[in-house]
Image 1 (cartoon, helix red, strand yellow):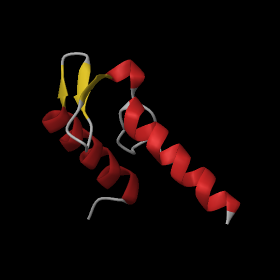
Image 2 (tube, rainbow, N blue to C red; image 1 turned 90 degrees about the vertical axis):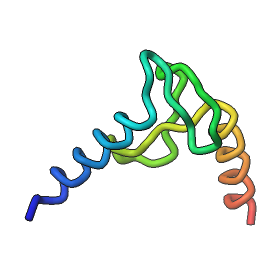
Image 3 (tube, rainbow, N blue to C red; image 1 turned 180 degrees about the vertical axis):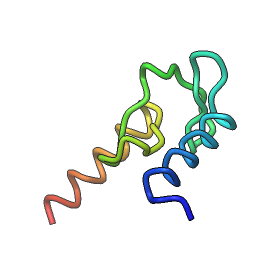
Image 4 (cartoon, rainbow, N blue to C red; image 1 turned 30 degrees about the horizontal axis):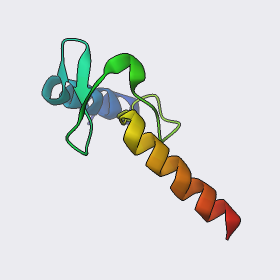
Length: 68
């Protein structure tokens, strides 16, 4: 069986094969965004990026969670 890093690399490659076209990616929300504008919501280097709109929404949720 592959080690955990190999499994994450395979997952990242599969995500890119299905979600990247040229210099754009498709966010989970369905919006296409430039790869250079993708934002992380997880510290893993293998985590899929999100579009700027989803990142802003995620940040608002994080700020709300920090306030409670």
